[in-house]
Length: 411
Image 1 (tube, rainbow, N blue to C red):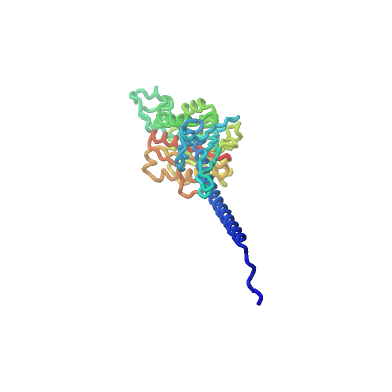
Image 2 (tube, helix red, strand yellow):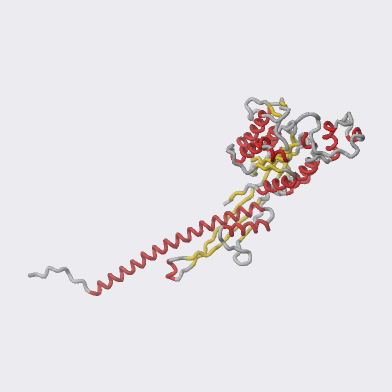
């Protein structure tokens, strides 16, 4: 019978098959290893990029102080788990110059990534580099300051009072009419408490926290109504010496016997001026528009404007509550909504004095204004409100506001 078995494979072909299988296994393992190492490198690159971006943002936020900016960049890479150091493993940090000046920071860092499978062919590490560029936007900010009658309440009387009353205050009339003479006296003597003693100095301190090469600041005063520049107010300017001089010349409200805290009007005037052309005191298109609003009392004057806030500029009649009232609060909130909805102006609010710490009713309006303008939602969640009892607290609040200059990644 014929042999029914299949053909016999020579031994040398079997050996070739084993070699081919082995080569295929090596190729397969290499591809798996390469894929794993590529994933390791990709993950390391993404993590490093996040750290470098954070470092660039931190550095830009500290400009124009390049020393602080450099320190901030290293600190933020350390917070992300990297060991960059100026002496051993430095970052590359640059501050490009532009015309007009911009607050730019460029941070670049390189790390070695340990490989897994490619070690078998002698490739144990590969360098990964990331670069980030960030900018701290220029700031246009209006200081909106309450100069109402309550700013003179704690002003000390002269030791000669009442015998020197006509000399110190020709308008005072009867010798004991201190309530009607306070504002005149303290404005001339420049010792209004807390205005001259605390608030003016703190406002000038805030101006010093900004940089005239990039930022501009203006001042809006309000009491019974908001005052447009140049009536003891000043439009946005990079002439910081002039701004501080204007702050020093501010007077408290003088028409006596009237309670006058029109917070809504202070916001209204600031909104109107911020939205003007830059040459006319308005905010620049590439800047962050900000208002710092300070008061030492609750709103008690308002405008009754149908259709507010769209036609508020046409409303001239003021209504005095005589004491804090809901209508005055609503008028202030209407202008806060206008700040955000029409211009995306962020309003930082400061409630000055012990009564804001003791009475939640004094606090709520200022909280709401900050809350409305931090994201356009009144949700009870804001970090843009401060209640401060004294000058030390006021300076701390203003310093924190100055630190919150908006930063953005350029690339």
